Length: 284
Ligand SMILES: NC(=O)c1ccc[n+]([C@@H]2O[C@H](COP(=O)([O-])OP(=O)(O)OC[C@H]3O[C@@H](n4cnc5c(N)ncnc54)[C@H](OP(=O)(O)O)[C@@H]3O)[C@@H](O)[C@H]2O)c1
Image 1 (spheres, rainbow, N blue to C red):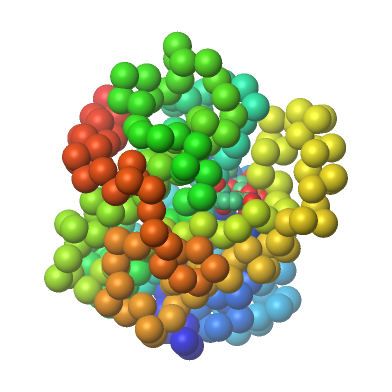
Image 2: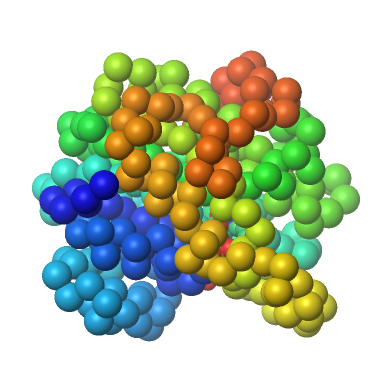
């Protein structure tokens, strides 16, 4: 689909899947707003977009997605432009090998991978509705299956032993449950919301906490992983395909809707997750 005259906001576009997605959307003619925490990386990205797609109008919004006040500021900066929003791509994510806190003091994986998606979307929800038809696409992961339910009694793994894949999978399960709950709320508005698994992709994911063993495993596994451009295909498909104009609340992998495990279809857990996520935002 041509993305001419379509305005897109994407998070986590300085590297990996997000960068490949941003470059592809720019090549399709979209106007881009990229949310990055690092100014130098953000400017380098804009220069690359400009080099590959000189027609593309792109804007950098600087903010740490582990900080609610930054998310609110970035959303306000976007809203103040008065532009429509046709695509919100929640893509930024982290994996940690040990328990770390976000700038707001919340377990970082839960904060960046789930609460940031939730807050950014809530802040931009009305603009998306006013701009309909519009889409929300969030990058989840098949790793959701490592957590077989939301751990409401210890959402931040304060007392539960910190196991990387379980904690990461838990945050990605939250993405899926939240997507399904949001789809119900957006029914009839012309805004769809879906999430994707990009496959196993060779990116910077897991390298953020500078653990040497993680880098070595990453290098050894690299030949078995997809390139970022290949990993971005499902995100781009779900964001742009005319065939999905009315599809909402789904989880896609390899550009196809995928069946979910029972705990990712638990609507009561999704409702409860919504309430506790709102409570987090109020308390900050
Ligand atoms: N790679 C895989 O195999 C795989 C599989 C399934 C799902 N995913 C999902 O795909 C998405 C993209 O990950 P990736 O693999 O492309 O990882 P990546 O290469 O590490 O990119 C992550 C992006 O998120 C940004 N980011 C992280 N924390 C942030 C924060 N607090 N504030 C602002 N930006 C932040 C990073 O910014 P900096 O450049 O500043 O660090 C970077 O742009 C994630 O949601 C991930 O969970 C990946």
